[in-house]
Image 1 (tube, protein in one colour):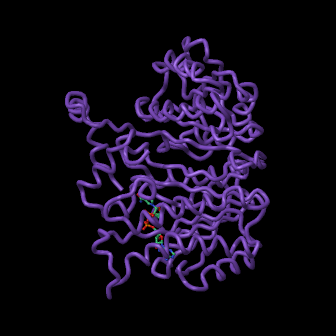
Image 2 (cartoon, rainbow, N blue to C red):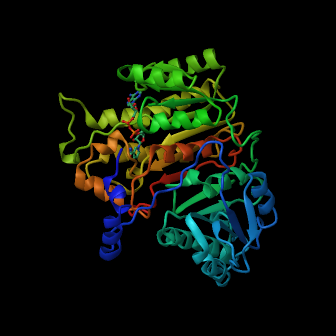
Length: 450
Ligand code: NAD
């Protein structure tokens, strides 16, 4: 979908107006190209905690060049910075944040990646808990001021999970996280500290099967493409009306398709049977299919033209819950499997006219909370919560609302479906076993909600 304003601000007249009128200035975000190195440049490291020792080797294993940046920038321009803040055990230690980042802020490339590593506060006590919780305010603010397409994240890494951060750093430091900023993610916080295995970082899903619902278009299509790029055999599901687009895409990706309405009474059984019979089970399940039927609650009564409440809840929440339950009960999900929900920032912040949708999407977050840490054999459950993503769904939003959605975020632009897909691919990575119970917003750090 096109964003004409973004094209305009790159023109000579646009540059003048942006400068003089203080208009939003969206930069072209770097995005990952298949086969390229994860990070095209140097990452500066600092801090003295549990992760400082292993960090250079972990990054080296990902093909990412790093250097100690605690002495200031020298002549280096940094593509990213990582501060190990796990050693900060009281409020007075927090000055280390300023001491590390301030001298380096003018030596960053565009689309720079800033990452702070901490200890989950819920696993700390007393002054350490206070200090670790404080990191959130720092990283979220930094995301709002870094500018020029830069991002800032906080990864809370549980003790014992130091060896399990590679897939998370690969995502947070690379252009794969182009539209993810101001997020707080947890590694190992639900008790699993095993990293999981990945043989080839360019094709981490080789030999694995991934189910994607609503795969024929929009975000679902990009999820299918990215999981295929990462080596998975994709099984796409969509409604009979979308059968030809679905078949075409799955043929292109060498995948498989199943045409059905996920709200059908026997849909969970049919999906489980198909996956078991044709693929011997499944490794990654992405519940992407979703619908909106917006109306203020006062106008939401069931009518002859359809029940907006029930249809939205059925597709967005009840179906993912039933399908997940069936796949787990029938043991169709392999060990080290991944279940991924697609929530929405509406499910976090609420949205006028979307009581039905926001209920369903908050319920998806509830599904993550209910299952995280409870699943056997290294199976994880996480969700993405997209903000304003450029799709047919958002192209249909009235102009003024659409412009607000696009600009009211730290990137001053909408995200692309691929940004949601890359986040899901991080969850899906076999090396993300310790990444469990997260809800990560893909929203360019939107001003709505936290
Ligand atoms: P979309 O409408 O372009 O695609 C949704 C797909 O799901 C379609 O192919 C549709 O046919 C399929 N689908 C709908 N009902 C189904 C059913 N009962 N059974 C099987 N398939 C069904 O939407 P999108 O923008 O790509 O959104 C994908 C997901 O992302 C949805 O869950 C949506 O709520 C969520 N989301 C989107 C945005 C955004 O800005 N576009 C923001 C937040 C969340």
